[in-house]
Image 1 (spheres, each protein chain N blue to C red):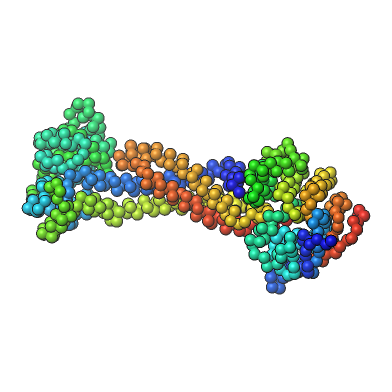
Image 2 (cartoon, rainbow over the protein chains, first blue to last red; image 1 turned 180 degrees about the horizontal axis):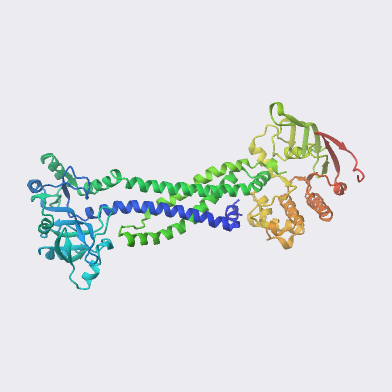
Length: 383
Length: 234
């Protein structure tokens, strides 16, 4: 029966309708791609810093909710962990938001400031390691060149050899180098400086309180075992997490404690529903137009199952033909979004497959509804 | 020697509607049609001709009485059997009912595609040969909307006959045609049917073609009567 590809011939016979159908499916695929892309970019951007921390175990305050809502705790707790079997070294990390004055427009904007001990290599970010000597100088900071453009043409000016000096929290600072991290939903831009410079910027902060404690283990030490030891022996005013646990902790905050995860999942569902309705409309019209022909086929001896498979074949062809331009356009749109927002919007194989499956599912559901109409084709009516 | 008739209808009654609206359409219809016979059926509109045709064609379920096609009882037959019977019947409709998305040749091939034992290239050759036989050798790859009414009807005839059915059922095949092409179409059916030895049952109002048939049946108010001789032109 495959000698004549009737499903394909029927689709291409009505070229305008085919184009409208494909446009609709492409639109739905793009909608799903963008929503899922935004969601994953959000998660990836919020944990990008976490994944770059050089630590096996992380200490935070139990009252901390996420990187943007950290409670500080006494650094004594961090130094206490040096006494545990397997711990090699510890290093504090200070985090806070400050107002950065755009050196060009003089406007201010909130920026995330990271304070590290310049003697320790705790941030595995391009540009940080080689500039540690710079931040040992007073009031010198490293600027994230992937920050949003609103912070001013800092990296351009710096690369031209100009001295970039501006104010952070009302204190005059100089940019001593550039590094790469990127904007996230939480922070539009990032600065790295030394712990001493950090405390100079945030004078109101009491000394001796840190935001994150980074613990590095000796080679061969069992992370789970050390983690258990620390958890059971330290008081409950600190919380110890593995590095992966810290990443999950952050993701979990954004997924459950904010509307963002829900919104993008809902957006994806909307794309799915819109696509299903469009495909259903197209298939229903197609079946209605061909009802007399289908009845004729039945009279000739074709079974209902042949006509069902005809409709599903059409749905599958539409799904795949609509998905391809959707995929191609999304590569461009991801690029556009990445340049406009500095968010890590990248096409992954997994997402490509998920959207393809969703598109096929969408068309199959539409076909399953439209196919009921085929049963109405009564061969006795056409005589 | 009496052969078993291709179509054997015995005391068939048929009703439309349910409950108080139930209306009897066919009354006690009995007729046998032998292999190779060309039978025409006339009668006023609404007398039940088309209903009888759809019963024979296994497009409706037989309700009362016995209706055998190729010796198969259709009363109470399951849908699978009905589909199988349909595959061996050629239909020619009043409207040509061709598939618009397919060329003339592909339309004819759709009928061959049901017979899976015939390989695709053979099916294509036979389809083309059949279109040549109905005089459409130059129109094989045209779409239905590019053909005239008579040509479309001839494609429909080619489609009905290409798979060599034992029975051809035709409902007013000449209604949409002018006198000349109507006559040509019926003579074509007659000659092809004689070659292939199949039975033809034609429902028609067209007096101009009645002389082609072997036997003339008349349906009136759901009752079938046999007009033994071919009548004089009315």
